[in-house]
Length: 265
Image (cartoon, rainbow, N blue to C red):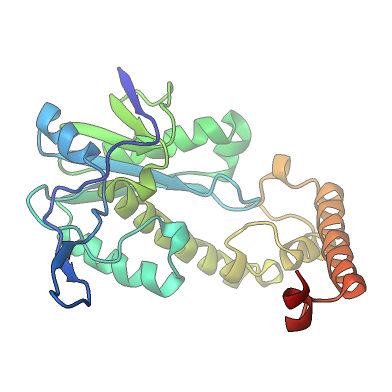
């Protein structure tokens, strides 16, 4: 059975929020906006305290595996300050938070699906496979599982899917961070062997430097061949460059408004 939570659940959090002061004559205390939704608290109440958050990274790159993480965070402690959707954090912030998450987690595990598996069964099925592997490697059996996005029919474990879950559920955000840090480290290490593709900077995603490496040196065993139609990638990059050039020239033609222009409005 798979459940889905759509966007727009009420905002609150299992932990108490700290008040903040508003500078006025009475200096009244106003509680801060709750960071996380009630989704995890509600799921724990229904299923038990051991809730595993799961997320994956690496669906979009043209090189490297897809990596998933499953993490069970303790239900009776405050959320780690600074945790957020991994895409909103810097590399340094993710690395720092990953240490705290690993220290505090009841259990966590990493799963991956290789480039060969992505090519054989497609990226959607490979993502589900990576999640399944992460969950089966947990040393503690969760009472329930919550994942980011939509329900996955091929994920055999009963789960609840939360749209934009990495921004709404603390445990999913923790999984997102651990998965991202793990995959980035893996791509950096692969980049030492294959320096022409700048994987330590682009993590296998499509960039001008990555496409230039493909054009000059061809593909590696770690490239997703079905993703790597080099001629199409070059055209895409060139088209993007043309659009950026047109935008700059258009701004030059019309001129940037100054204070006199604004006053005439």
